[in-house]
Image 1 (spheres, rainbow, N blue to C red):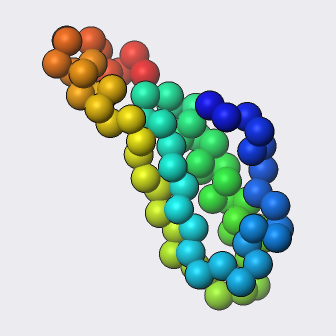
Image 2: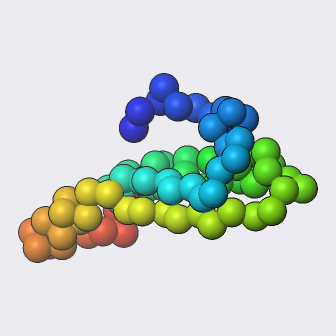
Length: 76
């Protein structure tokens, strides 16, 4: 997980038409951070028109490999 981006900067949200968050499906903390970023964007845009926001899962190939090898996914 890249910890250089610990928060959403207000200037990133200015005049935004939407937001895409990408999380590492093999790292549950990554998805939690995306949820935190979504809340930050909502707070920044409070009072403005809502924008569409999407969560994209990355590294699904690792999840597939884990399933094929019989590794338990609930360990994630």
